[in-house]
Length: 221
Image (cartoon, rainbow, N blue to C red; front, side, top):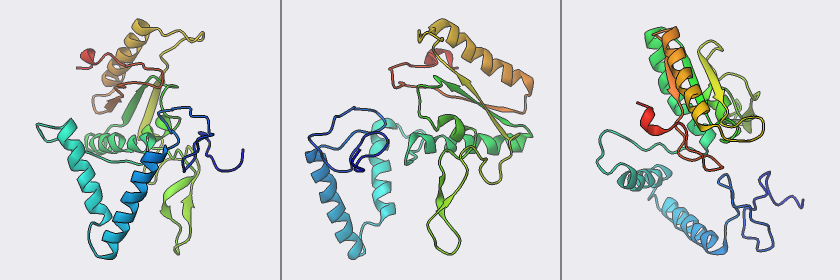
């Protein structure tokens, strides 16, 4: 360990001697991609100095381009950009929490393929901090505010949001598709029946780190 890689063994600059793990979490950038990123950085800095293309403008351009691909009909959908998959978990939880509070219930988040998604998935889905670094600066303009991993977000209590983790494999590592599919559907029905004011979030996984798709989407309706 020379201190130039992060915990995923990823370097911020091209390194031909580095073993590439090709993870969906992170991979070391190659020379051509790094050059493109550097050119974009120079262009953005130049535009910023001349009062053009603010960060918001650039992000709106990204959302528009992604929307053309994934929302061609534009039927009311929108594109939300997040810095990581764990951060993305906050969005559906926040929406569900708003609805649950209006109804007078709680949120139950059902996480399929637990153990094969990001390590911060469960915590973030349960409205918990998944990192000691919080996206807010300390009072007085200091460094990033530090929080306790597993602690609830401000304004959320332990009774507001709960999560259920369903592992897709047994103790031997074998994938139990039919058993796990039934477990997922039973968990949804059980929690919906327990309190009609509760809001249930069901995670639909398009592809885990080992290629699993859960639950089978045709049964989600």
